[in-house]
Image 1: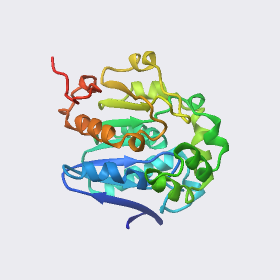
Image 2: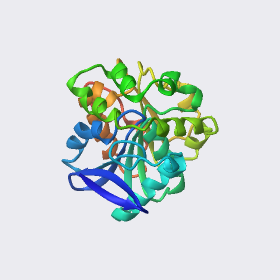
Image 3: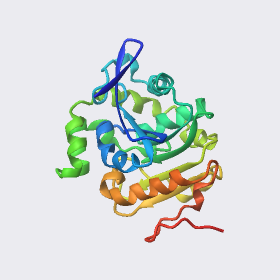
Image 4: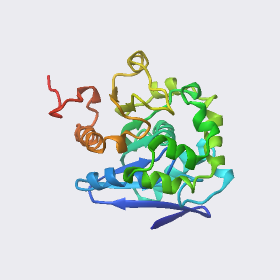
Length: 262
């Protein structure tokens, strides 16, 4: 287990591989651990980092750090301490929000963002997330399968106050407008059967800037990286392989997984 200190707070993270850095940010249920299969695949060509937010996994449980501002500051401190000059972010749910806010404050650092299960406002999140304890929610979302084990195990480590604090701020965020201000290329990935976050419609994605592209995984829920790991990893690989500044709209979800060219 790897840790750093930000102030007096212990921050847990893990890292695999060598190459260009990627940072994986988890959702409201679980911790860094469910990213392991994707990190293992990415580590063949990239240096894959994943961390636990305040109140999750093995990072300190400190209610004074549970607001979105503090979670963003955690990412800033992590990247500064590790001396990373530029990074790609893969965020899921809460991690997508934190990654977006970090990129708005640090556009020179973020190379690109892949946002999974992105809520475009508080009304896009179901009450199941607000009213269900993390372990119960994890089991209802994933059942009890080998793929679900990392989420189920670390859901017991989630401080429910950390979930509530971020959700309470969602009502004050115009997430759609904030995404429209992003400079780095962005790829949205949603499961069309996500029972936690309502996927944005095509009209919502079309109303944003050109570098944003939306892809829906048929049959996937809130964890498309677990529901269809091989498809998710291939999509991530293609996204990371885009040239700097190249639009993700050139990516297509096809059986042959080839990038469409003009």
